[in-house]
Amino acid sequence: MVFVFLLYFQTGGSSWKVETGRRDGRISLSKEADENLPSSNFNIAQLKQNFAFKGLTKKDLVVLSGAHTIGVTSCFVINDRLYNFTGRSDTDPALDPTFASELKKKCKPGGGGPVLELDQGSSTVSDAHFYKAVRQNRGLLTSDAALLNDPLTRAYVKRQSTSPVKATFGKDFGKSMVKMGGIGVLTGNEGEIRKRCAFVN
Ligand code: HEM
Image (cartoon, rainbow, N blue to C red; front, side, top):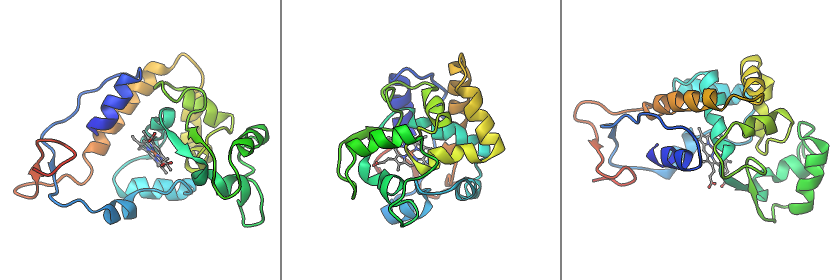
């Protein structure tokens, strides 16, 4: 949480009050994380279900996906969208065709290729540009593109992609981050409050 806060803030996003004193487990298993995290291939129904399971709403889903305003992914992650969408060497029709051609020039079949900006052309700045890209069918991940497939999330994408809205996104993002930080908090004598968030004491 603190990592995302710093990343977001240092790349021009707004700040929010981070709740402190969260009781965390003493054991972290990557397997458990993998079982709980949504896949980038999830459709909108799967994403909504995954978020709802953790007490997060559709609004949280579309707002927190905005974290992809910064950062990168790889050709490997989007290989199926480009070259094997339904197992017949096809391309995801939800991708803008011109954008798909540009990506295919960079990414070889099988997943080889350079690092790709999640928010193309704006991946070092925390802003609402990500939503503009999604609206133009230029979202890299299936899960980002899927935000257009629900009335509420689509309306949010549309609203944020029409400037000037930066302040709205920043405020929404802080709120949803605090909510996400409250998932699965331990209580009583369970776990411990970590002195350094990435390590057990
Ligand atoms: C909605 C469900 C989500 C899915 C399916 C998803 C999936 C992904 C994937 C596949 C990547 C690329 C990783 C790689 O290529 O190694 C990524 C990157 C990233 N995600 Fe998400 N994500 C989701 C939600 C979130 C949330 C809620 C946050 C934080 C609030 C977040 C923050 C990031 C950041 C900052 C990166 C860039 C990492 C980097 O540059 O190294 N994502 N995500």
